[in-house]
Length: 265
Length: 371
Image (tube, rainbow over all chains, first blue to last red; front, side, top):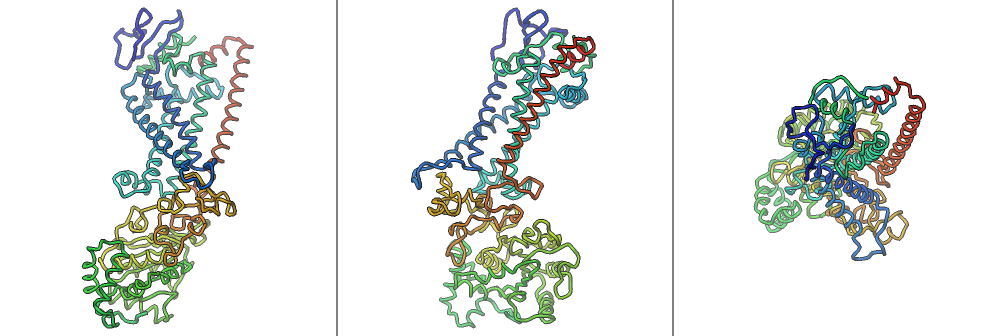
């Protein structure tokens, strides 16, 4: 991806100046604020491909579960409405699956904002402060340039929900021929999820949980954009978020795993 | 019902009944075909029938409606039926046998002692965990079952009650009924023939397979014979083209129902049910539920009774015995979530307004930390 160049590019503030592998890129904007390159191009592409595939999968999935429109005509020999809807659902499902695999890969090779480390006390105390923040309670939530811990948790849950929908979905895809090579890849799910009816049920329930996630996710993004003025929504197109310089230092210290007294204002 | 098992081979018994060698070979070929074997396997079947004696079968009913027995005796393919009764020796069956009382119960003991490890225990119905819920000849059924199963060559669970618990185990399960397969002693192989009832030919052919090969047929993850339970009804259904076309009956009386459209929207369980109905059909291949215009209720699937209502597309809440309409419940949850979000958004606006009105230092600091 194209890295911003020129006078605006800065080394990590408060550090030795050596750029580490997973460090993001900073742009000075105004005296007190910087623009941070948070979402790299592959992440942004993945985000929108994923969003589109969830939309397509949801609409086609609702139709497959409850065919609300009938094929035109009656007994038309070349009607293939459900067939086409299923084909669109299956092809999109492969896109969604590949996206899932890519995003897992990107956790390890993206910049620091690709994933947060949950094995730190600070992650969980930050989550508690974030919960209090969203409940309008007095809190000491630090400013997070990337994901706050609560958001990160919701993305992990989203990843697990996606995995369950993907697994059960592939079972349903290969269900007509369980004794083939592909069928054998999925027939073990009888022992995990139960019989076919149960597997189908898991698929429906988790699809709906993903939709609930999407609703919360969109609300949180809009809210964050309006309340924080951080450019959250545009950041998923441009990649850049706006942050106060002071916040950035704190966030970077946080990312480096170092304790630091909150020094905001 | 035979009162004593002769150790003559099947072939010898057939010859005694006046079957010629030529007729015998025809029968063996018919059996080979009925079992779905290659024509090359005819010599194997002939050899088995020439060398193996009839298979003693003890058929016990527990918490059952005797549906599997009723279906078993309606195994059509007439030439098959006769042969199969010549291939097995049904020693005990509560519904069919003439004997009763002590004589019948003692006959079980006789078979157990004479043919340990050779007889098949065909079990029908579920077994209750509630003490005293089911006694046969004065003994707890569970005790008798364990005893007879322990010496059996294999246990064949006939019907959905024996395989999954079925209707006795459906909510609220007053007798704490369980599948008989849960009571099979370790080391004794078992096979599941689900269905309410199972197709007669599936039961007779499974027994025929055991006679000819001396082993249980190949089974799937849930111990069902693959030959009959590896495919869904949905994938073999004669109405499937209407499913793919997007043409569905909405009610039992509409034009779609008259045209023979797919019964998916009437709650057909074909997409989740594994059985051979679409291929073997019922009553000698005459018809089967979906052909006759009734959606499948999934009687061969575990917990089918608790997956009601039968005439609606529902899914089960995992871990619960509650079915829901996923679209309706999902939409309600999404609506509730949207309402919650509206409240939260309003609270956000109010909180910001309050902050703007009171610019005292402490509050401002809190809020800036909050942000």
